[in-house]
Amino acid sequence: MTEKSIYLSSWALTEPDDIFYFYQPTWLNAWEAHMYERGLYGTRANGWGLKRFGVENYIYAPERIRNPQYMPYLEAMEQVTDSALQQMPTKERMKLMKSRTAFIYADSWGESGSFEKISSALHIATIDTLPKNLLKKFSITEPTCKIRGEKQAFVQALRMAQDYLAWDVFDNVVICAAYRAIPVLVFSEEDVGKPPKRLFPRRADEVNLSVERVGCFILSQRESAIRLQCGEYHSGTAPQHATDIDVMAFSERQQMPSRPAAGVIDLVAHYGESGCLTPALSMDYLTRHIQPGGKMRTVIADKQFGYHYFDLEYLEG
Image (tube, helix red, strand yellow):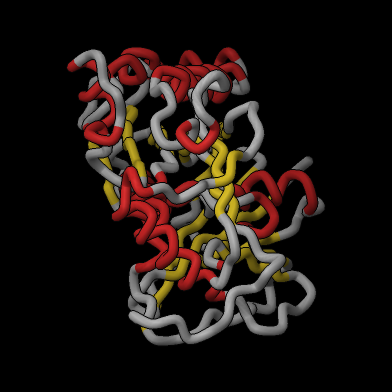
């Protein structure tokens, strides 16, 4: 770790308190059904389960995950930011409110309001641009932005936060990230970069699991239990297991080594896939399974044979 390292002052993640519902293609949406088949070909899976906020149990089962209510999703954003704030000591929380704080909103799809049953223009703005209620919660008066980077959005937000703090532009950076598992977008994302024809048979026992999650991450240069550093982008090379890294975590199942060695974790297999928030799950793994002093590298592959990565160091229990 170099002097450019930053610290994770507080963080929180949440997901629906519900079960997985398995997608069933129907003739009512032929394009969605087609992308479902394409997504299965690309992942060699035999089915797709989704866990979403706002599922209504009284609706016909195949339709439950297609058009859930969006308000529980927005409420989860607010709850997770409250949780991240409450985990901070009172003194640090007060400093945060009075400091130069930047706000970054990251999600996988950008403008996804057209896929929701929106009943308010304010809610469209919250989903597609910035959640202004969260800006008030953190007393944000500095510039804000939204990153729309599909599966790369969260790591791009981390990189921007690292630059902001290293340049002494801000004292704190708050990242709120969200993943909405809209079926047609989930399926089409897995089809990107895949061959037009199926090259490998599906695995009968393989099922894709997509989980909606929202998270809040507060970063600063004040020392805390988790130190973080974003690495440079690498193109055309395979990730190498550095000698000072205890665990390598991969957020793309297809990009993992064919024969995983000890200290290699498949985040998708361990937690389910959550788009841009899949890499953030390494923070949960670090605190649950790695001893203080351990280091973890999270690799986020793209569709162009390259990858981003960031390192986490657990300084204390």
